[in-house]
Length: 139
Length: 112
Image (cartoon, rainbow over the protein chains, first blue to last red):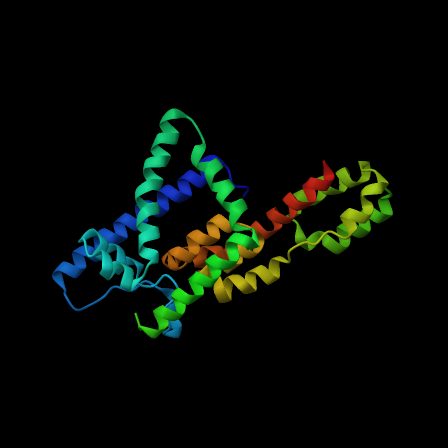
């Protein structure tokens, strides 16, 4: 399965769509039942340890309510995910309607940079710090 | 290249490639110049079994995808807890094929 433009776009589009459906489901549930939190994380269910991106749903939901500091406190990755979820579908629609592949080229370029130790090492370090923070604050 | 060398290469490395690729690899290697043999015989290929083990153990962090070189998809899996756990499970079955495809891509640089 070599990655090409259409395959990448469908993967991203389906992921974003699932993300929006998930957000809608969680937001609706959190209105009706106040105390229960919905958890989908496989790692948390099996090992009882939060994964690096646990809490990003809660983070995005508090972002949509305008609690920016709270979102940052729950999980800073929520900002990144929210940004991707807003930008990616618009970019795909632009690319598909103008028959270009700017997002695909951008993706390949980002992949190229992320493979370099110069960029990868600090990012991995930040992610591990975030993970340790997640575990200590018991999300 | 000599048929003996090519057959030896195919025998030792057949588990790294998809079965439908092996015939074309063999034909292509037979036509190839002998000077490329040192490069091809020392090529580092990823073992599909290793990536399956990593996928089962750390698939929901996307580490299997990072390992075979699909950095973008790896980041995607990492940010979404392995695609809500569903994608991680799908990848248990996909990762071996994906690893073999990556090996093929790697070998192709020397074949053409």
